[in-house]
Image (cartoon, rainbow, N blue to C red; front, top):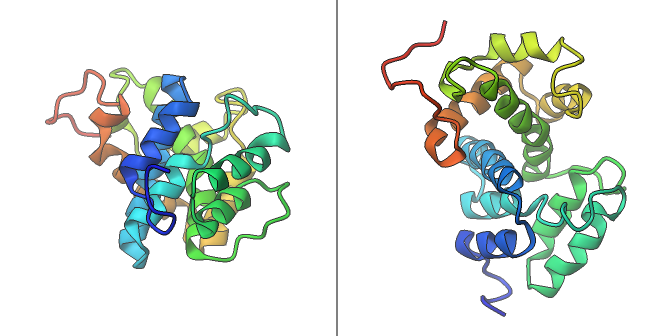
Length: 201
């Protein structure tokens, strides 16, 4: 074990993520979801380290188990072997609608609410002229959500239901996550060619 069973640091979670996930896009997705979930931890009074770790690891096994229900069910067993606490493993299981694990805690609801949305915001960012999340706002995200051909693998239903489950207005939720990702744009590879002075219209 690299760490105590009761204590899982962000660094240890990144180590697990990088061990099992070689795809740069999947690693960036984990970071994008973490941006949003950690921001909600601060807003809702959650344990930011716990929420960050959960977000970083939610898809860690996706390369090995790309199909349901193997992901995240088989991944959960691997996390248990690595000493990842039960509450984090449960939250990860709950982000899959087919897992049979209901979303009860604020962490579980936040993870589900941010997962698909973070991926969608990334996709919207990459089709902007400057390929930057700095050019994205809630209005542009909502517009792209109506385009069924755009990022078709992202569940619009999950985005809508995620906000509802978290008890937040959809536009406010989108704006909140966009701002969270903008704050870490360089780390996410979404700074693009936009300068800090550029404003979103």
